Amino acid sequence: MRLRFNLIDVNSCHKAFPTPIRTLVRILGPALSPILAAFLLAAAALPAQIPPPSPPPSGEGFFPLNQVHRGQIATAWTVFTGTKPEPMQVEILGVLRGARGPGQDMVLAQLRGAKPEYTGVVAGMSGSPVYIGNRLLGSLSYRIGQFAKDPIAGITPIAQMLEVKDMPVNTQWASASPASPLAQTETGLSSGSMTFQAMETPLVMSGFRPEAIRLWQKEMAGTGLDIIAAGGGSGSSRPDAAGSFDTISRSAIASVVPGSAVSAQLVRGDLEISATCTVTYVDPKQLLACGHPILQAGSVSLPMTTAEVVDTLASPLNAFKIINTGDPIGTFTDDRDSAIRGVLGIKPHMIPVHITVHGEGADRKLNIEVVDLPSLTPQAVLVSLYDALLENNQSGLETSYHVTGSVNIEGYPPSPLDLWAPAGDQVSAQLSAAVQTDQTFAQLYANGARQGAIKAIDLDVDSIPRRAQVELETARIDSGNIVHAGDTVVVEATLRPWQQPERNIRIPIALPPQLPAGPIRLLVSDAGTLDRALNPPLISNRTVDLDTALAQAQNHHAADRVFVSLLLPDAQAGVDGHTLSTLPLSMANAFEPLRSARDVTLNGESAVVAGDSPAGGVLSGFQILNLHIEPGGGLD
Image 1 (tube, rainbow, N blue to C red):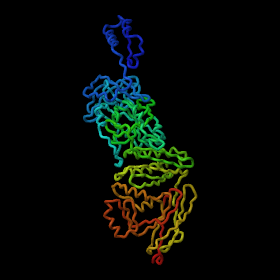
Image 2 (image 1 turned 180 degrees about the horizontal axis):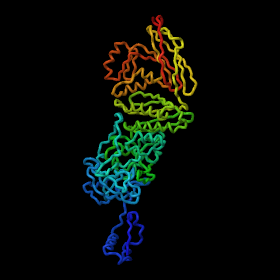
Image 3 (image 1 turned 180 degrees about the vertical axis):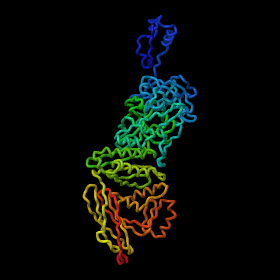
């Protein structure tokens, strides 16, 4: 008699067999060998190994790494669907010494059971707690490659994660330090011929258009945050009636257990960017998750929420959990090598961003908060503004944008923004407007001299349904070029808007009465040319300090106006973003030693703005006009 056996998952299928094993032995009788019959009878005497209904509490104790050996059977908990963790069997394959770094071991294991064998190792599974008995061994954190046939994972030992738990909570998140390169969080760990990588934290970008998502992926390439998963945001990510995002849900805190999914929000509000992993350890005050870093940024302040797994997508290339973020439960305060730590019940520090887009139809308003982290905040602002401009009914290939607003820094007056992005350039006007705004913000945000926090970013955008480009074609002096000091002369400029008839504007200017006799020049120009004449670019490796950057923003000239400036034969100095014109030679000489030590420029000619007029769009071009001052006028 030939016997055929199929391997089954006894934990999930033991109730499907109504015939007891003893009856099976009696029926088959002589067909069974004595050894096999004895084995079946012994198995019948064992109690059914039904997994507990929920993972053991973190206080049950920890399994020592020195007692781990090949062949042990453990249980891991993770959420495959919904919010309730499910068990899966884990077979210990061994301990890899120093696999995570010197003195940092890793436990190698294979996942068993129908679900993990179908899905494989899944992005978002990192942090899933692994128990031997009721004692916590560590968290599933690493995988082998992307096309591994077997669901083999690396376990970060709990002792390494507890080092993060015992670190002091830094309540003064340093957001004023200069931006630094992002850590490579998709860590590669080599052991023999195998290469381990941290399980990805699936990033959900809720409310963003594909173009904005591609921009984010380009900006975040190589950081581990460029892998975008399907998912949605949370209604609790919207501000309450008082405008606050920080209403902590006590019931949601109570629902968090080892194996629960949690999300870290980088952007929240009308748009949302969040990264999700699994809770390994939780006590009444804090939790540990992931078993590896998100950015390895050190001290952070990220909103921490519950998460719902809508489904788990199986894929040999990139299996991941489809996530909806949930209710706020606290703040992630540490992003470290072996874990991220979240403190329950405390509120995070974020930067409010308010965007209003005007057009021919109804205004579009976006209220969001972005993470305060030097290596990430500028990218979050960039992609959020870009998306706001894309999701506008007035948006089109021929649409230009005018961005005004302010960056509010604690301890300083608001720093104004006045930027134009006309249609027709090599990049889209939406992207140009977002990039210009972000560069201006980053110059202030990442400035090493800034100590005050960014209180808010307020942006007001006008959508203009045409190419707002204007060229300065010609300029002339209407009343002739022989004049006297104190006279009023009229400059006539011919402007040509994009694909529109040219038009003439007249700009009267009053000549100073103290002008000496002789030749003098007039500069008729756009704002960029004027700003370069007033503050020539510094040839220096020094970073512009905050006071200089704020002064330059205050003194920035509007791009949609035409300016007439006197070019006088007197010295001019640019000091800390301010222009000092018509200086006596002795004062100019006093600035000479400061040129290499401070933000100081010197010029032998002074530019003094004498008049300006609206151009009707972003002006480009300049012309120089010559005047001759006759004796006998002004103060002569």
